[in-house]
Length: 163
Length: 186
Image (cartoon, rainbow over all chains, first blue to last red; front, side):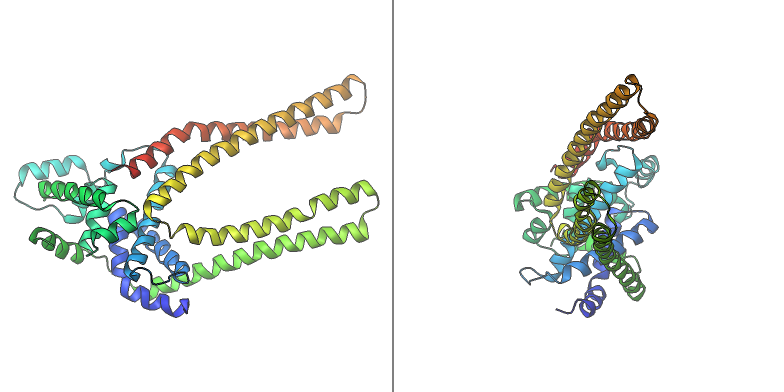
């Protein structure tokens, strides 16, 4: 496999997927850009070892989630602050609460709502929205299908409350 | 996919950030090349230093003790270079792990890091004490000890650094583990 030419076609096909995955983990635009670069570089390096035992989309998504989790861990380590990862303050929580109070029928921005989810649930629902099956999601995350089903249901329930 | 998920899927797709793929490709090509050059440079520099040491042994070393010391030291730069080169390839394998495997690896790494600094702190403590005792004995015997005192002063800085670093790693260890466990839990 010629990785140099393949990376071009892989990026052309999967950059939207990779950028959505990066956006689901990182709200800050400049950090998102760095994260996307890191993901793309990792995909390029890994292409040589792709044996076709899974779909290329699943292979690429696995690497993307791997890099994103690594990014989250590094961000938390370098900030030196311990914040509950399922309570990310990517938007002002009070504003969100007020917004929900005042406009119960209005829908929150989906991406903001996704960022409010615990990472474990967010991973599953975003992969569902990308069209992955439960089996493929389980493969990427390294968990059982039953766990995927549970997290998907929980994520859906929470999103329905907020949106 | 039910209606609700279909609607969310449309909203999710429409929130895709606009990315110039050509610029992205150019940037990662630069990074990829830089990383490859660095990996080879580490290897070649290591080999170069080892060869230089061997040259010194053969043509410059005047006594057996000095030769023996150089022979013992000569493989170190090459081994370091090979290790750095292999590490860059290992990183590629790590990026292909699924999320659960990566989190388990990170957990194992935090324990390894703690163990590394604990062992380093113990070894430094033993060596520093030995150095202080040796310098002390020389002073008591009335022998020239100024070089050894300078050594003690220098190694004291290293001793402090290692122990401070060990303390920092030990303090952070439970928080790092808790963070990884949060990411792992369902």
